[in-house]
Image (cartoon, rainbow, N blue to C red; front, side, top):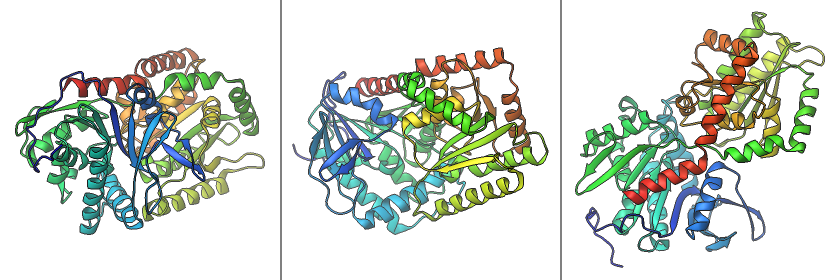
Length: 472
């Protein structure tokens, strides 16, 4: 098939409701190395959501294997065709650690940390996106659907359309899309917008993110239209809010597993039978871990909570530890934990249990069962699936969810206790309310939360996106 000239987007699309294959293009592959020549499936909601659809569609996954140097040859894993993309050590440093995680990530999360902008990072970001686009173009057949994921690959839709104008292309952003006063900082804002406008469907976690994108596209990329539909040249792009979710059935089933139930009882015994405040986060400055610890310390200092009565468990999953901001966050969190325990712990009664490690889903479900109060209080988050996972494990309708109003999940989980994590007094009051909720109130709240997550699970999300893409 001859290549289209750059900017030539007028070639006809395949008929609606095409039953072509699904090509997923993401920064990472859905498998991890398990040994010499062996691979295991990666844990995670995205893989779980797309796996059945990929199986039906004879799917292909294009992504990076996490290593440097030459990529492995394409292979098949559990009936899924895997096409690795190579990244060099320079690519990892400048595309991934640099442009993706020191420029775009902080910018899109309200500039909680000041983003850095470097020309060399941007040039490598362009080159790497082009490599992903070429890999997808080689794999795709006429009539296939291509679904590009997340902030690492925002230039891929346009690049792929220039290579293969016959394809239907969708893009989903898993993190927030910032408002104009922040997005305008980006020196390459027009290029990013035009990259996304190469898709037929661009979807976001929340309506506000979708509106931010549409307005920026009209202001900086010459697009016309409405918040839901923008036109660029002869093409129309659908803009949608399609919040991602979890596999509700998986967590609901885990919560009833006798091994998980037994593990939860053992954890509670080791914690001394106290009421448990639980948080599970990546060790990331956007997650509000330090603000949460300060809130708990303030309650202890004021005598509103005591170590004989309550304990905080913070599970922090290591993340991007080569990036300086993440190293700093780890240091600050660990200092805070040490300070709180130094001031308030008693023999056999630690105030904060801090675990810096990853947990299996079974172990995670056991901690969810133990938690009397779940604290999900990021400073900014595209969605935050931990909140939904916790709700899915509460089969007996016990427990309370304290949720940041700055998480995308707050738009759906309105019966949670919503807080501003920067408001230490309001935050602390919500925690005390969660600990003292009348049982009937707590049950009603949790029943509504569970109904919401059950009705709108990750499979529903994937189906909704593909229906938009096929109908575009």
